[in-house]
Length: 277
Image (cartoon, rainbow, N blue to C red; front, top):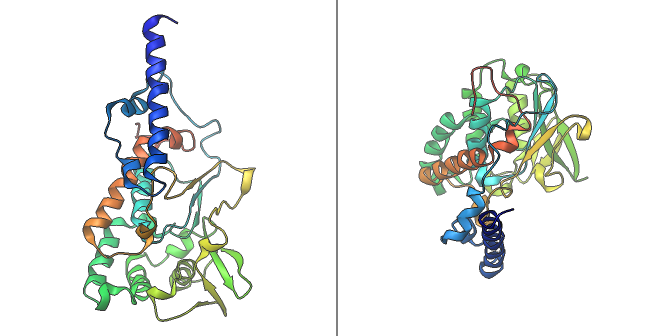
């Protein structure tokens, strides 16, 4: 290693040390963790990668792949942004999806209409959010949506009073499927019900007791998307907000983070035949 290379490695190590020190300086929930403003830290993002090295999955294209979405609350538009990158560039035909926000994560455009409807309600739709979501999904989904995602979508719910986790993956109607989705995201402040009734039982927020919903374990490759893996998240951000600008910001964050970590996704999913990043 010559002197120039030696200097480059030292500069990179120095920038990492500064970044670690700054995390302790500002605390775990500081927004500054996502907005470093001094030049040395940029070296973390500009560290040279080998040229002409193509990242591809280590398994055949039609292998079943698990994609999970952890609990996200009011940051679901962040997951929407990630999902938009997956949909646009990658072959999802052999994927199974699991989590609390999985189905909603494929409806960014229509979701903005839901936010507009919530804004005209009392308290900006806070109490009516879950009923509004049900109405919105039932008018947005195709009539056979429940059949298309049968055994491909796994919804993680928490049954009460046992507090046991239950994964639901088969439905008879769209309304049956939507009710299971609302059960996994049921928080009383967003409706007038303490618990969500579904198929004769009662349920609450699914991420309370299973926030890592990877159905098939190690039998198949998997990726679990969590809101805190790629950026620092302030606790109050998980509260649902009907603010259009904030929702758009979340969506753009999701897209940006997915592109900045596209090598992780490339190692999991095969491209669509006409796409390449």
